[in-house]
Image (cartoon, rainbow, N blue to C red):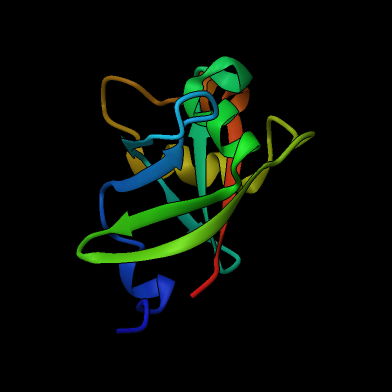
Length: 119
């Protein structure tokens, strides 16, 4: 079954990203906030380049992505040099903003990762 159009999945609250461990070779899955932007899936990693997830996807960029009940394979990349005021950063913060936390600092400093769907 083909992966649905990303626009139909954009309102889901979370996605599940599965990377391959750079040391163990085992699969690691995390639940993470996401945004559909320019035909890609974007996420911000608050732990930055030191996070295991980021280090794993840099070693093995082909990842598994699940949004809702749809699962596919994607290629992940760290988006270096994305300015703190980039529209995609603000859009992710806006999607998850609550009354108690506007997420501005997090969205401006977290490490951006973009996924391109393969199938």
